[in-house]
Amino acid sequence: MEANKRLYQYMFNQTWELTEEWYNSLDKSDPTGIYSTNDPKVIQYLKEENHEFHKRFCLLFLENDRDALENFQDWITGIAKDDNHLKTPIHYIFREFFRTQEQYLIHFQRFVTEFGEEFSEEIINDWRNLIIHAFSLVMTKFSEEHDKYSQMRLIAQQEMIKELSSPVISLNKSTAVLPLVGDIDTDRARYIMENTLSQCAKKNIEHLFIDLSGVVMIDTMVAQQIFQIIESLGLLGVQTTLSGIRPEIAQTAIQLGISFEKVSITSTLEKAIENAN
Image 1 (cartoon, helix red, strand yellow):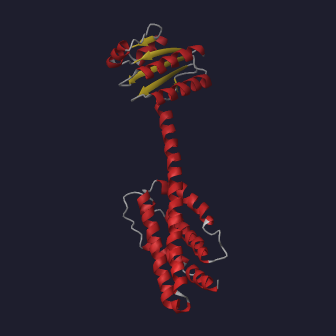
Image 2 (cartoon, one colour):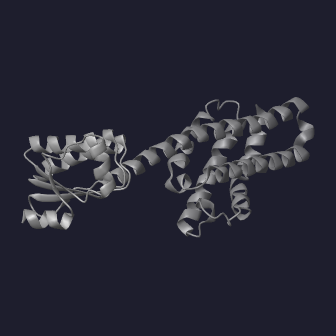
Image 3 (cartoon, helix red, strand yellow):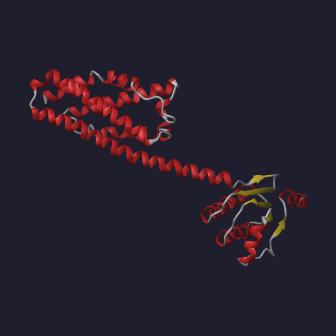
């Protein structure tokens, strides 16, 4: 117990030294990520979080603090969901974990060199193994949390892209246009349907122009989704006009047996709006 307190106090007294040593030796030439920042606020944040790590890690040397490793959870979560760290390639982050582990092993060896004769070889080996094992646990947990928040961030970005790629743009109080661009798969078509119905109802749209001039390809499932959108809008009392159907899409639609008989169609969005006025 007394031996652990000695090591704890020795390492704890060097926490700020460890932080400054770590930052000063940091490779700031990374092409991307938080470690190459020149922003004073971000640099201060890096140092504070690094120092907080040291304070928590030192507690592991106290036998009576058995929950010390669990106390890393909020630190790990904070780093894992930090936007700057999420933008940093994970191999850069693990590089810094390993560099910090090396720092501990070096400072621990200095402690052993200075006071090693006072402790048994078994205790010294236990301490060394504790350092390595604790870093392994922290890094594993960080990897799990980083992956979780990366996935959440990716999903949020995908949802934003979906929303931006299928906007219902109001032209006036009762008229709007839905410009569709790029490839439309079944998943995106389903989202377009849900978003379009919701936005038209919310904005009290009476006439919606769906422009397909930016859509290159269309398959049976997607075509059916588009026609379901038109039928569903009709049930809401929304008149629909299709415009900008490309020749290849028209040919595909005919080959698939899709009928446009009940759909208002114009060659361009400009003509569709002119006819409506």
